[in-house]
Image (cartoon, one colour):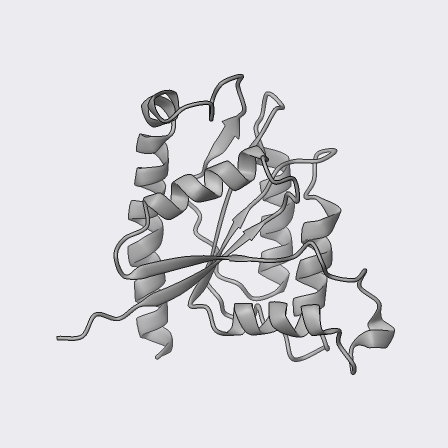
Length: 188
């Protein structure tokens, strides 16, 4: 029997190479089941969204659209900037939603996680993102939610990260994976 492989887009809302959210994405990737292939989607090289460009999208935008269209689901890993999502993430979402009526996001199952230094983690950014995803017709995993407050040394070594985050991320992935399989099976 052949194993179905699910290509899962990881859209990380931080451009900084050593960002907490990039490290969180790597930890999620390590907890993905064998039939999930998580791949990072590049968003840092996208031009600023301009509706005048909808009919002649830049190569980076076409690559983004292809990455989303060829994925079975999307995991958004986002920090919280000024109680919302980062501009680079909103820019990527806008690009792949266009031209009007041809959104690459439509009906893609989505998961939302994040880590930030604020006391509430990424709760407000995630709520804003969930509102955006609803308008894009993206079914989004409701529970469990993960709002992680970054603490000094959280990602410094595997042992401390394993103690605090591994069970949380394992539990989240244990809910996300069967949910994605079910949605993709229903849509087949």
